[in-house]
Image 1 (cartoon, helix red, strand yellow):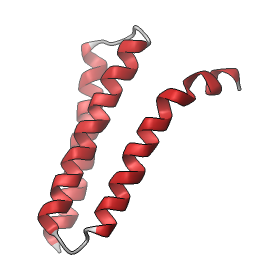
Image 2 (cartoon, helix red, strand yellow):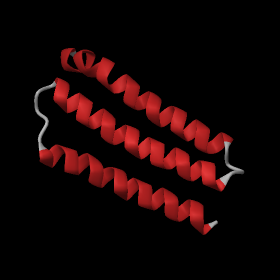
Image 3 (cartoon, helix red, strand yellow):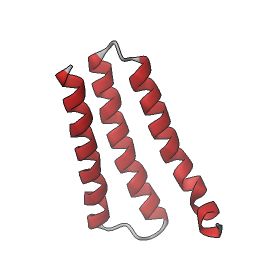
Length: 86
């Protein structure tokens, strides 16, 4: 429990990024271009959050950056393929 409360201030912005991203994606469901922009912004924010989080914990390495970038690109690919398909 102590570990969770120590990391909670770091994870709240990440949760906020995803909540506002999903809300914006849903609210602007009529505008495909804006949904693409929101998706790219969520991916970039996720990578930025990961870099900042690991920098503050003094365990930032190129492997970590590439991992966050890879996960972001996979998510971006999935969401964009769904948006552009419809």
